[in-house]
Length: 210
Length: 210
DNA sequence: TACCTTTGCTAACAGCGTTAGGTAAATCTA
DNA sequence: TAGATTTACCTAACGCTGTTAGCAAAGGTA
Image (tube, rainbow over all chains, first blue to last red; front, top):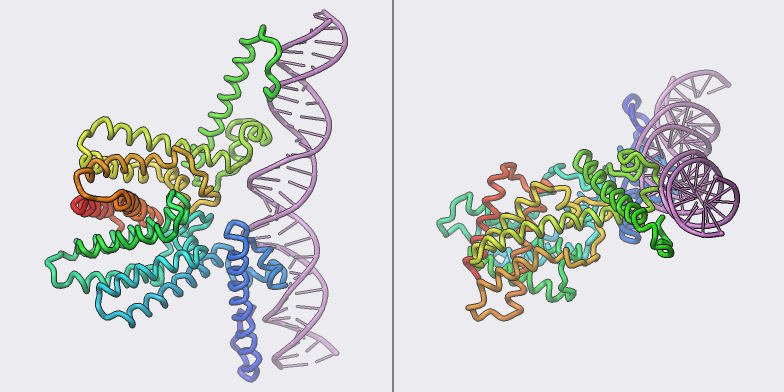
């Protein structure tokens, strides 16, 4: 598949079309996979179902992805990029670091519950191949956004770098922890508004204590 | 298998021996499964490997467990019971609610990193069949222990029941969130002592703010 | 036209969870 | 002790999974 593609430069149009088709196939596979996940959950996603959905045979998928994990990884990257775009919006909207931090928390929370499939994949909740450790820039997007906001709030204080670093993780932890607990139904609070109030409360306490 | 076991009461000894053997088999399956998990991780645990390890054929396992998920569920219950015993120790050791809460946090943290397989199973981290929602008393053990301690600290304050409830979840969240982030290698802090300092810091801030 | 690359397929391998059905041993009954 | 019955256990299969080897057809190149 388009392995040795150099050589003649006359048929550039055809080559480009092929590259375009290849990319279309790739994005199509990802789109179809994501749709299957939304419809039936991660656990029932299979290469054969993807092949059925794109109306190609199974091995075609392996021309575009090394294995199933690579597909899941790419989808998780989509999730990180989507979250990043939302956080960037907050950044443009709120100049005040405290307001921005609140907005980031809200955005993170809403992202998780509006896109539970993404969130589960991104943070390995109830997932088979959670591919931990595959650190990429996208992976740290949320931490970097809240870092910026927290450092903005804290900059007048006498906090050390280490203290600030700790606070960043503490903030992230309480959010991620609460989302995980609620999403995995470990909480016995059934009311989603109530759960959100717990988050707001925690965020308030955190900011007050900065 | 021991289905209709009533009838005659002369052969009670044999019946008891059979029940004992059946229980032995059951516990043996669980023990062997846990060992396999510790050696090779959740993802590679299979019924066939368990059968090999106990030196019986595959269907024998289904005489003792409805399916693979039931085995995982039982193992997660073992995890909850183990954690519960440790928390009970704290309770006996520390009468002062603040000291007790700190001990609980420490215990929870140590439990997670000394028994990562249990923790992952109990809270569905990177797990295929995380069986969420199957609430059992064991499931709420940690929350109830910290509830007791937090209520002990807070009882002199003017906190409402709702506020207290929120605080309990906030405390649990920050612990679980940090453990998840570290365990799933989302954190870029590689030093485990450093990570624990983040926890201690958070616990301190939390208690100070009660 | 002859050649070669690309494209896509069929069919298989090895593994998985699960179960139907049969056999041999252990046990109970007479 | 002999026969009937229950229990214990196994073999072999079904339908699924991820993955890959190897082949046939289609396309572009000379």
